[in-house]
Image (cartoon, rainbow, N blue to C red; front, side):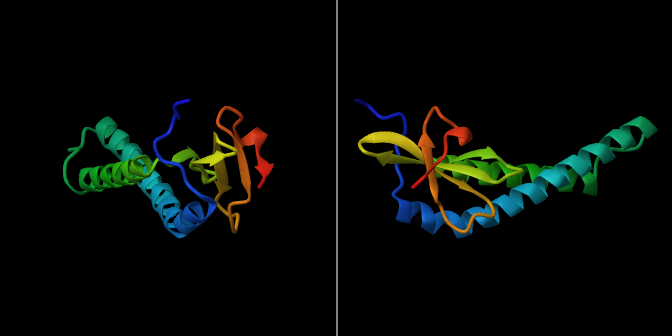
Length: 127
């Protein structure tokens, strides 16, 4: 039976990524806020007839590039960011010969849960 995912993580491999994931989640949240603020400023500038170039556009584009860079790295690693606010990340893994997700939520010290690929967060079970 062919697998849906090319990369499968062992528990140790997934755990080794947690420090980097914590950093990326913080960066993603910050960059999302920068984009949101810049979009609000852009709307206000448009409504008042002001120029849209310069520093605000530079910050906005920089934040978009930062978001894209981290998203591409997550994709390259085969990780699935399910919810940025919660910091919910799934790691494709194999359990008893079938594909599952190791499931981790920001704030949890360790990866302690897994769920079937189609079960989602509600189907989380302790390892």
